[in-house]
Length: 385
Image (cartoon, rainbow, N blue to C red; front, top):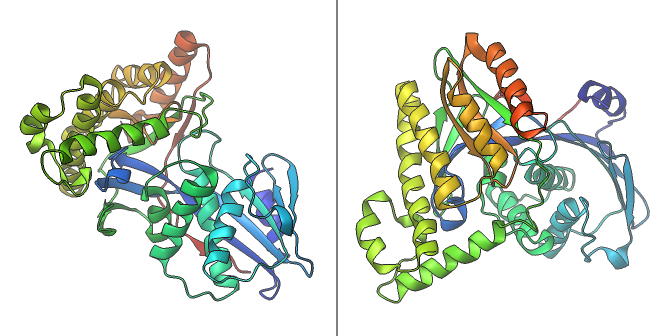
């Protein structure tokens, strides 16, 4: 099913009384991966692709969930509502559980999901599903929950119900996104400023490695644990409230405190990436394309070698991009262990970039890459007739 088919099927069914239609975008992170759960800085933007949700209220207590992408239908009974199913349904059901804790009275519903974000691309399909669910319930039942609280409860659902110890970046970005803007987000203070997401004559292009990944079983949660250990080590000398308060300027004295070579590498990524985010936002505003592109390469190297969340396929994609005329920069984006690279490409070189990268990636890995220019027009909303 394509997006137009889904909208054609369900938009005409909405009536504003017991049938509704909603959309929440995905996100791409321009700079600042694995810094959000340390309370650091990130620079994400919402994309035009995302998750659609059709809601039909039912008189009975059960929750019926459908994924049009997977062709799967599941019914959650009241008795099983608080139990994890180890399925895609855990993302929306986790959100519903959090809403129930906040006073929402469970209502029988049919929830039909359709996403046009590529699977396993690392573009926040899971957070998009969580946020469209939270936003829909808040709208339909007039719960009066703020955008920030919707983001926080969706993050809590992923942490506690799904079991991924993610930070707040994805959910917050989806909650506050404005078209054609990135968010320079302080993940500790939960404050942001908007930054226009354009560089004249260039376009951001995502390349999906199409490497299967599952964050619950990947090294993601292990990286979170390692950074908790780093903070414990530092705090034996003096109190650091959160690692995101540190920047690259602190490297020299931090290097002396943290002796474990592995933890030293993990910390080095976090403090340097924090510095890169602040600089990247300034470079976007100043239209300094070449310097922004260099930061992208630096960020990828840090994620690959210090934080070790890249993989061979992502490294191959970055290397191939660097060899194409008209590419200013490339990096993995998102949690890693697969997913996408983000590439900054001259607009008139995008077609050639796509052909070259797809051909050479297949030769080197045996996998098919998916290349798609990014549009930054997404924002969370109800879709009405």
